Length: 347
Image 1 (cartoon, rainbow, N blue to C red):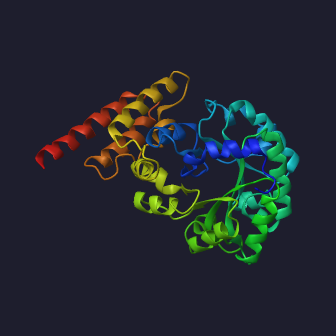
Image 2 (image 1 turned 45 degrees about the horizontal axis):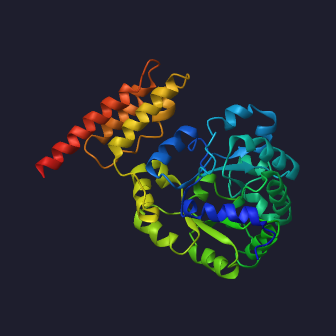
Image 3 (image 1 turned 60 degrees about the vertical axis):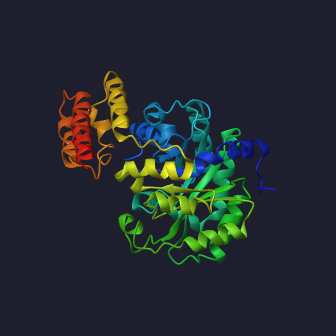
């Protein structure tokens, strides 16, 4: 029996089990709606996460701007990540997000940035498991059957990664959460910058393995340091799934290879994906979106191919012009594909 999990949420979680085998992490200023369209083309059944959106922003800001473009079809594998520490505000934000049809909701208990810490949410909340439990319990009620998960670290600062982490999981799971995405590093809120916290604290996959063994009734996904398709496939076999961050964004073709290795459906025709994104960009431009807003996510798609530097220049510089259209992408794709095919013929 899962800690407080209702049957409806559990059934929906099982329905999304395949999607969770490979997920793309929420990344501020990166995983916006255009990025997710791109990643969905590369990894059709992977779980995609929004950027973190604070509960207060949804309650008091331009809600449609924050959440629009996310009118997913029912069952589409997209998770809304929320930030906050006020249970009532998080519940209200979850309720207001429901018309946008996210598959799941996630509470950020892992971000180590100073801005997040000063707002009393993110990784600093690992020191307050009872408050996190109150937040997730409120979100679960408001989610009306949609699953709620938690993304966290293995600890912060002087927190003990054995007893204190076990206690954190136990307390939060009692609220009804049955899925934890664990970034397998500590976060040092005093002493390291957010950038340093992504690489300096050592990875400890074994600690996440022990969590899985200690709480066999819960689901654990592994995050941190996953950069290749072989590594993703090996690790995914031992957990509910793996979550990939910067590697999926900076080398998107590797995301397609990961999806192929983990889920069997990665789209590895990068030229076809580029042309599909050009069509998408054209439709978006008719709504007033600038081309660069779409192409900035695609810069790494052709990494490793002859002409990749010219591709990046076209999509970062040429696409920035006020009147730049989707032909910038189509032309750069044609040039690169011709070079690639010529090289293949020569070989």
